[in-house]
Length: 291
Image 1 (tube, rainbow, N blue to C red):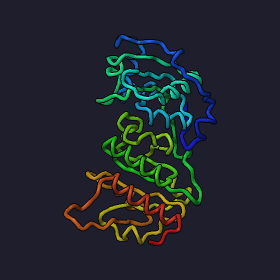
Image 2 (spheres, one colour):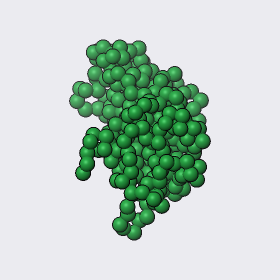
Image 3 (cartoon, one colour):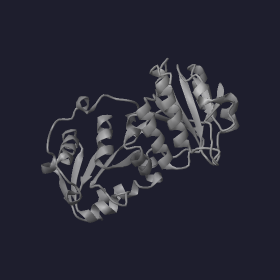
Image 4 (tube, rainbow, N blue to C red):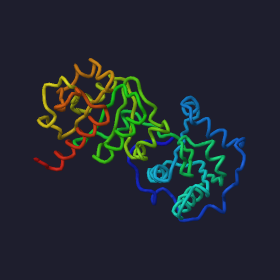
């Protein structure tokens, strides 16, 4: 089990410089058991059953390592990789006790979730996070997303949350798998730097109230324009899916309902766009910005 949250950088996680490739096991057959297991992890059922995830690409794998997520297996394909930087990543995994495998393009293509694999794929335990693991206190800035439908939307919100300095994210209702390979990819690995907890709307409201975190619900029918709302102090910004919007449970329990003015034909933005606008406005206010 891996805890969630912002963690020390990779240097503090026991990694040492090494090449690692000399320790690699060569795999040429797609029928290899390690390859078959990686293929199974493309499905949510096997991820839930094993508590494991697949992470593709140098950037996402590097950010997982930087968050002290222990990579158990790392597959690399020389023919798909350029430069030398990837060798340092392989060395870090090998030095930390992970298995490294040198695979053929056909094998990498079999395992990869992406249509155009980058040549690096890792298997690691999926971090676990509960509401009580999320940071609280006077600087708490949380994004709450209800009924997200697409992994890409989740990843985009995480990317904005990381950039804006959010302290955590809560998924409510119909929840997209946070460690879906598409969510990890679209987050560019920031899924490992922003703690994410899943809970029902009632559990989320009770936790926010208990920790004295104000609830600001984004809705096209909001009474207050978001630029006029108080976004400082401990606050949770709540967004819903474009299709379903927010549940009455969250709308009724919000301290304020806020809206983003719309001038065109569209009457709403998707969850990722809404979250990005609100998060960066909150970041601006917290930095003392007035215009």
